[in-house]
Image 1: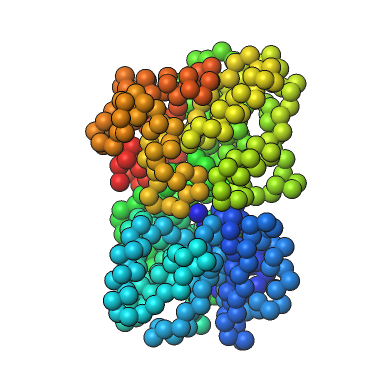
Image 2: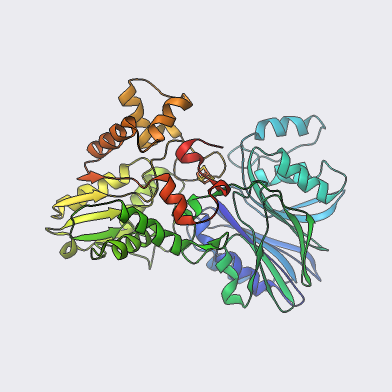
Length: 468
Ligand code: SF4
């Protein structure tokens, strides 16, 4: 996916920018960058972070990256921030986006006989495309508004100018922008915890579609937020870091609630409750606290040399690394009836391997409780690295098997999404059998939304029920 951090300060911003951006490292695996503006003008650096962490790559450049305003990026895809010189003047821009209509936009802009630089994989840099959209309009604010409206998918951005940092949140608020403040400095970022150790306190979140300009003196709204909101629910279930909060709801706490509600509907007799690290662990704590069944950690994550959430972009390599990171504790597995909570089941391959491994290590039973409902639709709003095609999702594979054809009709999928339907139960039973679990019970959508606790109308649930 990706994340960003921006800071405007009366003093040097470099220290805050460096650590603030680094605290977004769990959101991306490929590229990172920092751009600053100060008495030397604009300066920037971009590095690959595929094989070494952000701090290692940038610490040698901190003297060069001196300035009092800056933006930093962690990206799963394109190199950014990029510098742009246009009729708006010079600026640097970073985005968190997924652009589904990239080809139409490119064709449209190319009619005006401009050009785009291709990245090494032959694709257009989405951040450059956003900059080109912004440059279509007379002034910067209209340009940013135009970019937010034109993009099918999602877009949040930070744009650094000599006058201040413009922050614009996705028009449906799918991804967050949080503001922090301290004396003589303001910041804007994806993850709210990223500024806490830097002395900032919470200010507020931008609303959906809101555009604001940030200077060291304060934040001024230039375009008011809209009233429709669809925040990604997966941020709480899986993506977000435990210390983060979105819409005022902390990730770790939501996961405890999730586990609690899972336990309330369950009546299984097991010896221990465990979670698949990292996010499954918090869901399992909630389950164990509610059910009274002891919590244990039959898997321990090896973190010293695997500090990052994701590593390579190739699925098979990612699976291998996910496996290598988890160390089993045989004494906690042997002869035990285990209830294991994972955040979700995507393709099912990893969880099947984990389960096999538990049986081989002497587990008597392995009961699986995913912390969200079956995934039926591929996300079209965020650049997820987890599943590329919705036909790879285990629930869709099984639905196709049960129906004997490739199912795409929304009304049929809707029946499978309904936890009170026979079709749903058949699908769950088949997944359970295929992946060789002792039992399988998914979280219900209504319970999951209740675990977040905000107005469900404000939450995106597309990947579970196909509702936009
Ligand atoms: S479809 Fe799912 S993953 Fe994508 S934004 Fe919506 S809730 Fe998040």
